[in-house]
Length: 134
Image 1 (cartoon, rainbow, N blue to C red):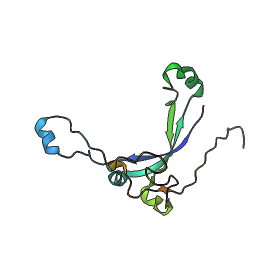
Image 2 (image 1 turned 135 degrees about the vertical axis):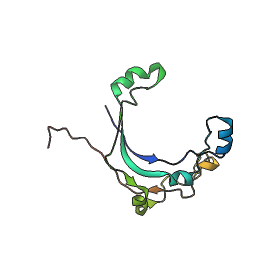
Image 3 (image 1 turned 90 degrees about the horizontal axis):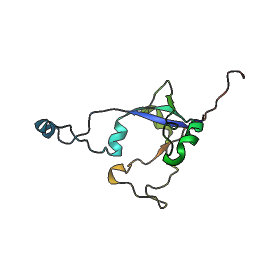
Image 4 (image 1 turned 45 degrees about the vertical axis):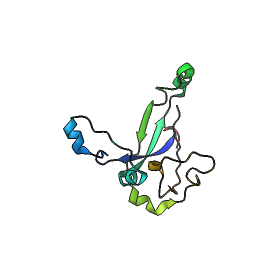
């Protein structure tokens, strides 16, 4: 068993459709459109710590020939608290990833370009201590 410390977020908001009136006339499920990064950031309610637990013994067995399936989604846990985006603003900084699409990386699609390309300077660590130790 292993785990990965990750940061996850909760997103909310209305369905992102361009023309709801046409949808009602056609009686079809509306098709959404991709959110821009600015729109997506406005919909983030808050952030949580997340652990993605993997069962490595199962992964080794199921990996050939199809790749990992159930071993990678063995369990997921999140923290008991939610940190709002506003609370993280004092920790906003430039990203260590460099320029969007720089360094040989593909240039993001237009709606994926982040006008505030950055990150948060938050140090995270995780450890597991058996209950038999102090």
